[in-house]
Image (tube, rainbow, N blue to C red; front, side, top):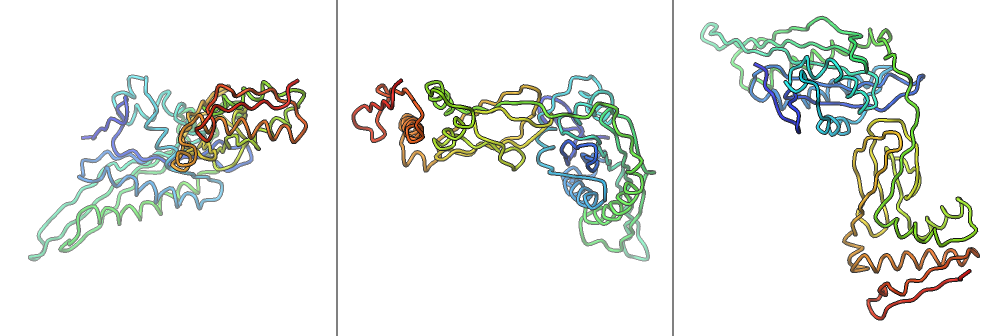
Length: 355
């Protein structure tokens, strides 16, 4: 009997583990996400799927022409993915990896292929052999490859092995894992032989789409920029950097500063926003055309120790921006008379170079 687990609002097959990938250009290696499903009733096998996935993914990563990336990204996406198809809601294997499901999963993960491995059966047959306990462990595994449209593009024959043990001293899972290691070796070899023949999805190649990132503190910067006269985009970007605008990172690379518009391929990406005196923001986000991310930054412990409150930090940001503009001969009309002074004493008034 298949065990089911409710991941979020959708019923999905228990023991599912995921490895992910990013979108690929035509000349790049094939990008594949690896799933491991447990369809047995063996106690503890659900918890073993992470380890099976890791071993399979690590070995596949060594295969020329394949690219297997971060598991955390895909796991987060899978848990946030909401099913709408009746078959998917049943939690059945045929529902999660058939119909529209693979297309949506591949889109979210930015992958072209889904490698689906399944623990079909695991059993231990115990017999007395000349006064000693003889246990024969049997493991049955399958693996298949789907493209982003849900079409089966590769598969290998069902794999079954036995492992006899006299007077087994360890738990059953230890011996199943010995068989798993053998299966990983055989499965990777079979997939490596066939991967050059995998049919690519017929969907058009993904292109980069624009998305915007803003933060709670950028409203102050936007107000300052609206009061800055006679400057080009490059000068505004420099003022933003000097004043301490938030740095935006995508998949580990700095792409600019917020507020700003950036481009990336559709799908899941790791977004990180950093700013001095603020707690770093980090999340897996789904990039879609014209997506907008408004990040609420919180003051870090260091920021609270230095400024005490957001108003003081906001006043310092305006002062730094205006001073940087003045040094560069840029006109800024800024009145902060309604703000509290950074020192917490009398109200501050800063008017720098009116028109």
